[in-house]
Image (cartoon, rainbow over all chains, first blue to last red; front, side):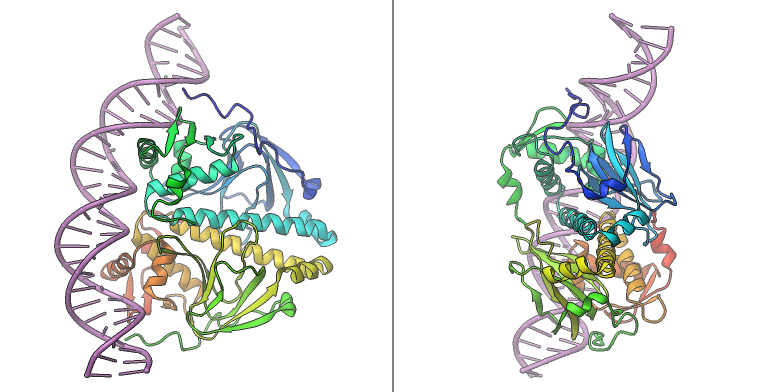
Length: 222
Length: 222
DNA sequence: CGTAGTCTTGAGTATCCTCAACGAGGGTGG
DNA sequence: CCACCCTCGTTGAGGATACTCAAGACTACG
């Protein structure tokens, strides 16, 4: 078991579409677990994931970690200079590639070229959409719903050819911190979904969604 | 009780700072509860709250409502044309004023004027910061923490002169749907915070934060 | 003055968290 | 090759927390 899905290249979305602002980028290559940006670093950069998977997380004072955003190829993010909140960004899969732009430089580029401004705007709106989806998942009541919809979302974004086969690129711990539940609850939820026949678990990192509609209509939708 | 806080003008943040893109705006005036934008409407508009308070929410199939974003003066939001998710936006307080911009028109303006592009970018980043904060609140474990930090956030944004006196502009039901807990739990959490001496409740819509640090350091911070 | 909406509290149940233990897999060093 | 360690994943038991259903107090409003 544990077929080391992380080492294999991911079929779909393995590489982000090229992007105009990449002209101003430096490329960062990361191994699994490597920190891209410290929680209290002073730098003011924007980033875009080119390949792999990364997490943007906050560690609270009690040691609990909250993953704010899962970053897949094409995803854009910044440190939101204002706000005072500081995040740390770490690669989840090996060989994660991230483009890094100094904020001021991109701003300058955007001021000169409307196409770049447009692109940055679109990337920001994508980020908003992502965060809204995350809020919708966090707003669900039971852990089974959270995990189920997380799997659906992952299947859509991290498709393995068909959209019913999910190669989980992250650990149960990451899922737990992303959904704001405990690891044990994630594990139990997956087991419960399997026992109901909603999903089939072929190894901890290999899940097949059999009855998508059972997740979607489990006493609520949207 | 219920001193009808909603009818009184709010001292701080009652009016949003003027904004360049407002030149392209139509102004919408709403009464309390009035819908600004239907959940399945076809229009592709951007909005900015000028005065009052509004909520952007999703109603799930089971009737449960989730408030994605609380919109205060200065806040910007769109219907995120892509994504498929549809939201409905309603005014919470009476005499809420909202600027409404056709998306294409603002895009055209932004393409011509870098200052407008910059402003839209900043507004989008503000929205991202807002949503991230909301995720951090939703990620907390106990309802007491959620409600406590919600009050802190509201005190900061909706200050009544000093930042320890909060005139709740929204009902317990709105708070519940915003924090993804039941109304009863919100009520109990407020009662619990009062019994601990952390806050003082002077009427359902009037709360004073006495020991801010007790909320912030209640087994976690950030 | 009755109705509707808001807010609170109680009782019982369901869910989740914590602590704990155990198994499996991967890597390292002998 | 194997012992060892470490991380990951799962399962169990007990306690804490939140949800549901219910009822009551209060306010606003017609």
